[in-house]
Amino acid sequence: MPSYEALVILRQMPRQEVITTLKRTAEAIFSKGGFIRKLDNLGHRTLPFRVFEHGIIHKTGTAFNITFDSPSKVVFDLNEEYGRDVDIVRSNIFKAEEPVKIKCTLQEELQPPAYRKGVIRMLRIARKGQKEKYPLNTGLNYYPFQK
Image 1 (tube, rainbow, N blue to C red):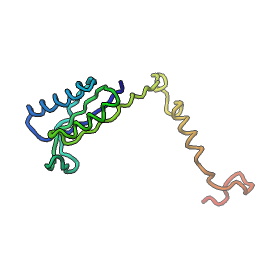
Image 2: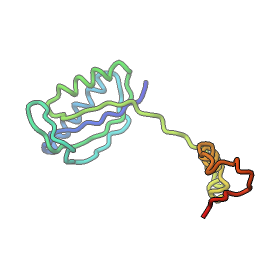
Image 3: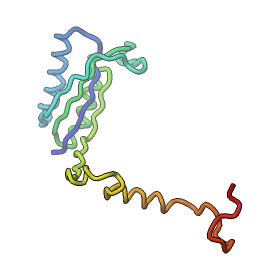
Image 4: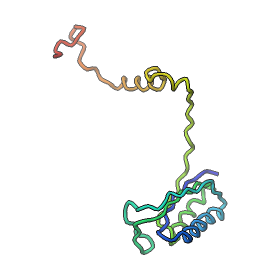
């Protein structure tokens, strides 16, 4: 099953109601055959713009990030269900990307930057894109018009 992340913004409400809404959102994932890996509370925030949802204008909300695994065809149903929930102001579900594995040794990191393979490769790429500073058709080994 692929991993997904759901960013859910709940309307401003007391803590007990927040808990019941979170249980409801988690049960929706469980009922569709998924399981939750992690739930992060991102805190109470002022929204970047006013959101008109379910007939009310929302200026603040409580944000949660839910990391879960579920079948691919369930995501559309979850989006639809979260859209109908009156307590949820915004919800977005994204496919979670695998973390990039970097192969690095301490010996490489202790070298000065000029001797690191990555820096040498970046310098080569940068030199390829540069043009000649002056035309070399003068027959001289230097640029004669330099101040």
